[in-house]
Amino acid sequence: MSAIIETDRLILRDWRDADREPMFRHCNSQPNVMRFLLGVQTRVKTDKMIDKFIRWQGEYGHTFWAVERKDDGELLGFCGLKRINDDGVLPDPGTMEIGWRLREDAWGRGYAREAAAASMSYAFDTFDPDFVSAFTVKGNAGSWGLMKRLGMVRREDLDHWYDEWGPDLGNGIVYRITREDWAGKHGEFEQRKSQA
Image (cartoon, rainbow, N blue to C red; front, side):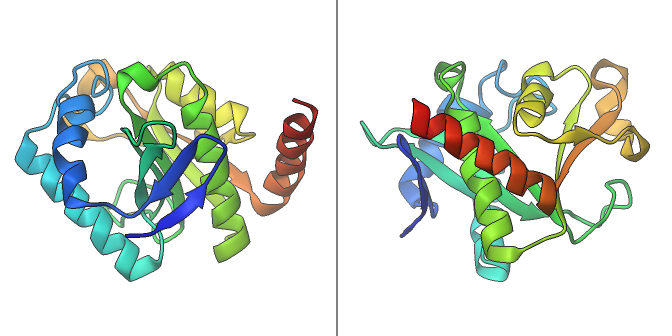
């Protein structure tokens, strides 16, 4: 299994069988982590999710990769890239989406931004899409807050609704960034990094 992306503190890499239990225990079975994701999952659903991520890597050359902390080798969750599913609800099927899910004890430390910024650069440098989208729900301020910090722009014209979400989660919302806007934003990230 190989590392796809390395940052100062993280490795985004292929999934391993040993990741299945910690991904379930620290992420998919935790109510706070899964609050905006239709609730906790079973171990069986977690395994199917990881199988899907492995399949996407083979089909597309990218996926939602396992995020490992360099210092101690701990699995923190996932971050990466997928192709938007043609489910009749999400806009622009087949285009690129960025997404993440980290365990609760990794929140507030900048890991999600570090992994997402590296994934975004990888998307534009490797696959050269016109834009990358991200999806969440209105109530998930942590998620759309990170989208804004990445330089993504809310696209209210692309709001969508899933019946299974119900009124508690509300509309699905979309943030998006173009290749040109990311190029400018990435320069800002690199300048801040060099000054730190």
